[in-house]
Amino acid sequence: MLVWSSEEMASCCGIYFGATSVCLALHKDGKTDVVANDAGDRVTPAMVAYVGKDKNVGLGAKQGRIRNAANTIMNVKHIIGKYFDDPFVQTLVKTSPCKIINKRNLPLFEVESNEKTIVVTPEEVLVLIFKKMYSIASSQGGLDVMDVVLTIPTNFTGEQSNTIRKAASAAGFKVCRIINEPSAAALAYDIGQDTSAEISNVLVYRLGGTSLSVVVLNVNSGMYRILESHNQVNCGGTHFTNSLVEICADEFKRSWRADVRENKRGMAKLANACETCKHVLSTLNSASTFVESVHEGIDFQNKISRAKLESLIQSHLQMCLQPVDKVLESANMTAADIHKVVVVGGSTRIPKLQQLLRAKFPEAEMLNTLAPEEVIAIGAAKQAALISGYEDIQLLDLESVKGECIPYSLLVKVSNSDETSLQTAVPKNTYIPVRRQHTYTIQQDKSSVCIGVYVGEEGSTEEECTLVANLVLTDLPTDCQKEKQVTTVFHYRREGSIHITCTEVVSGKSSGVTIETGEPAAVEEPSKVVNEELNSAGAPEQ
Image 1 (cartoon, rainbow, N blue to C red):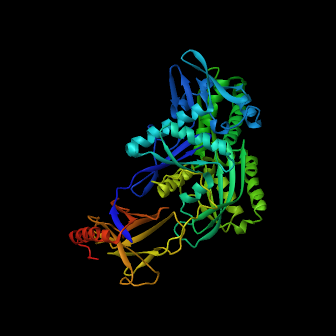
Image 2: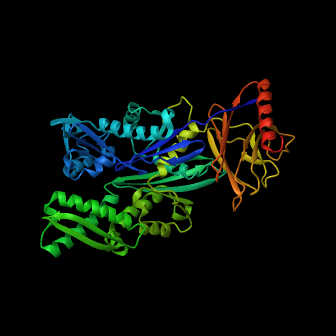
């Protein structure tokens, strides 16, 4: 038997930790959104700078990296869990402005702090970055923002995952689970969550600042299974920026007979300007690059078109698409077998890249409505909402997490809408935990709505089913120019309870209930309260 009880929905969050940036999304009151940092940016640079006695994290570190490059730590994600003699670590040793030293075959950072030379471990840098994200989360959600789901690449080892977990825990988060990045990206778009019978193949293409990953997921009954994956470093947006920097350096040399490449600070300033120019060209057809006193007191200005940039990076774009063919071949698939393509990562904003992906998958649905830098964090926050309140903190096994099935269907009747009969919200025998979202249209002139929740068999009448809860929204706007919409989220938790929230889109009004397993006698009193609310709201009594 089910017992109705009201509950204020707690907040939880998801974090995407990348090599160049970090993004935090918060799920609260049935909504998931990315949280802006103290500078108003929705993504935070994954950098830590030591300046005197202070440690700057995020934007402050990025803004000062030209003057303080030797004490600014970047790309820590690619170093954690690796040894000093790792090929990629060796590449960073040669190219990083911040000195990387060898201690017991482990890569450590050597920086100046408070006029002393100190050694900083990658784990310490992780903790500082997560503390920054914790302060961002706390400023939005209060002290109850503790539960978090973290994301990792598919090629991370258990040791690397554990390092990420420990750093987040040391920063104050309660780590509920760690999931892989492509699954979080698919969850952000609710792939397989709204329709339990959906079976599809999804290609998740992520191109970030310094790395690339291509993953093929099979989605079946809301479960994600990785069929094939490819991860590659030294392939990302930084290479596009470097191509633009080289062209600008050549133009400067041609115009002024001076080589800016001899000036490290000048090249760093030029790289900053070219990165901004590249971002502008993702939305505009042309952009200007201006750098004050780039070399020997000379200012530099150059205008470049999107077509010019695309011709410069054409070879890099082709290299970034080659892993797609390899992954499909390894999975014994063709482009026609892919139903949806999810683009993730800031570098996928480049229109030419999206055009090439569409040409490669002409029959697939391209999912790019969310900001690509935020997709993984949003999916992680949705996963946090799905499992919030559980003690389980094991690494998500996407192939074996099915667990129990629900023994009945969850049915819904919406008053003051076009829905006059029971509609199936979650079918019988759906695996839990599971999350389903449905949107219902409300008549324009109605100021209240009642969502009646029933359990029973599909196709049953209202009299044959059991009413377990009513959710009531009142004081809704009646001057809307179009029909109102109520989004209802049904969340089956692992222990069998059901958390339901409904939100009216225009006004933002929301209501939530939790249906727990309990004794039959406890059903009557909550139902009486619900009926009183319905009568006072002018909604039909159930």
